Amino acid sequence: MIEFKRETKETKISVKLNLYGKGEAKIDSGVGFLDHMLEALTKHAHMDMEVHCIGDTHIDDHHTVEDVGIVIGQALRQAIYPVQSIERYGNATVVMDEASMSCDIDISNRPFLIFELPIDGKVGNFDVELVEEFFRALVFNASITLHLTYNRGKNRHHIIEAAFKALAVSLRRAVTPNLNAGVPSTKGVL
Image (tube, rainbow, N blue to C red; front, side, top):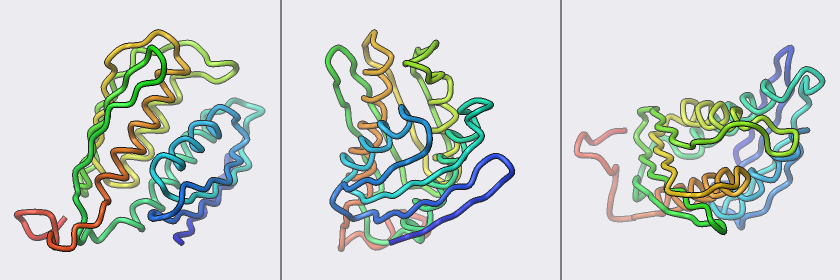
């Protein structure tokens, strides 16, 4: 179990993560929609994760959402690297009713994000522009390459949830043990 903590003037966060778990989640970020997405991520990645955050949500949800992404990314980085004997690449297309999202991931030690979700506005009280902030913080702190591609859909909630679930399945596939692979790179290091 990896444990990471981060405290700033805006947030106080603790994350516990078991990359090869059972999909069990204890999530309390103070942002209900984010909690829902992180529970879906945990369940479909088959990892165990606890997240607790006290943030300045009286201002807005931005600091909480971004900082939770940072800390989860740091925990993932510690759980994944140094890369040894995993598949490295993963991809998935996940549908949720009318929505379809694709995710491609490379456990590359080269952070890069392609984020193609045509969403704006709100889901309940949640500003959907924060979804990209979360994924960017996660990717750059986990040091992975991630492409999220919108295929179709109209309902913002469905599109976003399909994106989180597609990430989950892609991540699960990328970290699948491959005992014959050694370091999955022609360079010999990631």
